[in-house]
Image (cartoon, rainbow, N blue to C red; front, side, top):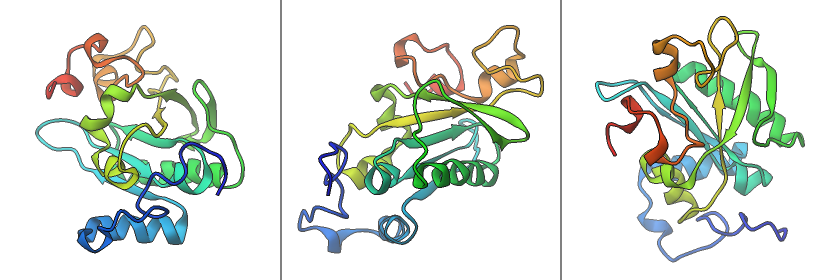
Length: 182
């Protein structure tokens, strides 16, 4: 183990005496992190809002932030998160403000650091894995067909609403599908 503050906070490297109580989903997550280095949770679109997906285990295995995406088909986001996860696994440093090409439809994606106050709303399984925040999460934002991100002007309302702005505190986030549960 390294001196990284994100190591040894999760069920994989610290036994709290309750491993036998893990449900099937938790066992699957633990198995995927152990075998592949991370797991991708996929939450499909429903009547409440657009779908989203996020990683669990990148911080544990590679000392890099977890990744989260919103508003696309969950299978597409799964592939995109795996592409970025593979970059992290080979030593690429993933950080706030970076752009990466070759991840989304030939357009760049941009990484934004998620505010901790969103974690309970979106990253419950990761909290269960790590046992408590903080673990770093970067939102992977994708642009519209013209290359504009959902916080840039001018932007269509549909694209603007497709993804939250997790770098903003919840009380500063524009009202919409992502704030309905607040």
